[in-house]
Amino acid sequence: MKHPDPQFEGQTKTKLGNSEVRGVVESAMHDGLATFFEENPDTAEAIVGKAVEAAKARKAAKKAEELTRRKSALDSTALPGKLADCQTRDPSEAELFVVEGDSAGGSAKQGRNPEFQAILPIKGKILNVEKHRLDRILENNEIRNLITALGTGIGDEFDIEDLRYEKIIMMTDADVDGAHIRTLLLTLLYRHMKPLIEAGYVYASQPPLYRIRYRGETYDAMTEAERDQIVEEKCDGNPTQVQRFKGLGEMNPDQLWETTMDPENRILKQITIEDAAAADRMFNILMGDAVEPRKEFIKEHSPEAEWVDI
Image 1 (spheres, rainbow, N blue to C red):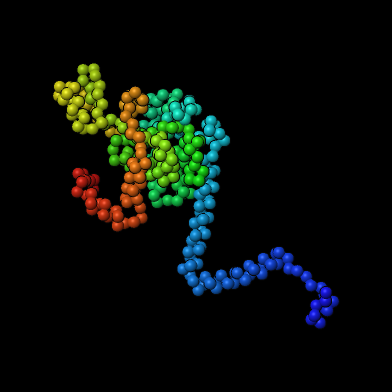
Image 2: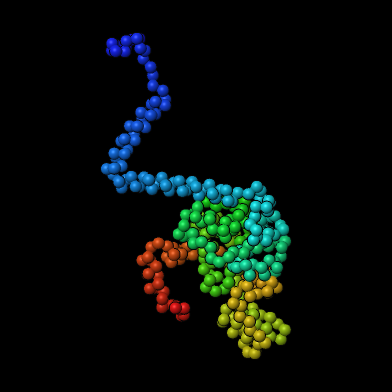
């Protein structure tokens, strides 16, 4: 069919290809959106922000997948070098002690029962997950070692069926620093691996504060009041020795086994979802970005402080 316009005489009508249509649409959309964004900068900023957040989330998910996936649950070659794994491969029998400090970790490795007890020392305080995105969290070596040791993955990759230990025991010193580290660990588990807590797999060890000896007998006390009671009732007020444990690292392997790791004698506190939620709330107040709740908390609880290191 000939075109009615004389200048197109002898030429035939053609259809636009897909790429040409896309080019026309993209050009029109580009011009229109550019004008709209210039006139509505707040909307433009919000859209760009959402796009950046989505890109970061995809990057974090990919990194989590790469960091936590192993060839098989029995393949120990991908496990952290600091982990002293146990012999059993039955998760229902296996225990993982997450131990504060390399010193205590060394004693725990020597004192443990290697058949069913694994030891993972963590150095210092782990990253506060309250203030960071998942991709930043996964850059922390201690957190990455813990995730890899557990075998479950994290975030969208989390699968409790891949868990390697059905007892995860946080073994920290009985002092303020130990409580801080335990709270950091609880916040991590609550925010990113909550099913472990819901299933009842998370515990906190309860190491004794004192060891009392009298006439060949040994007694352990968890508190000062319990110490005084033992001295009065068991030692007739005249003990042979009263030893104060300043930290797990001060215990020799035998002491650590007898007081904190031996299933026959140890005291474990099973962590509930309420415990973890309380820890999370505390960190949200004390370590979050909002200043006012932190001021209110300090104001409310400052009278309870008996000693402050200034």
